[in-house]
Image (cartoon, rainbow, N blue to C red; front, side, top):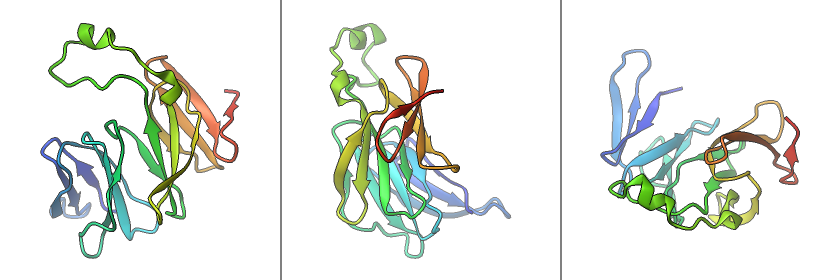
Length: 173
């Protein structure tokens, strides 16, 4: 695989692991690129941004595939199913605070924990199929390689959740 990374300057860069050279750079979003995922098929990659958009990219042409998937909050975490047909997106009901807002001011804003979860999105239609519980304020997560589970880091609670993808139920740790 090729290493790739997003950046604060809105770009996504792909590197050659053998030579350590930049292969391609894309101005990917209107704001900082927070997360990249490269599905196993190697034909596309997915990027998520501070601007609340998710974009799909063709690796052969370096062009965007289809329309943006838009969310109300920054995209801090996403994962792609092994078959590349589903994207999982972290949702948070925590207030959206700009970087210039002091933490004390942000803490005064009301969080809506009913909005926390993991959106299950069909890549072909760009539609949310369902939202499964992901614990409180799911910050980062990944799909298990040993079965259909998500391992979720819950930022505000300082805990982790294991969620079965089939039914969205939390599993004992």
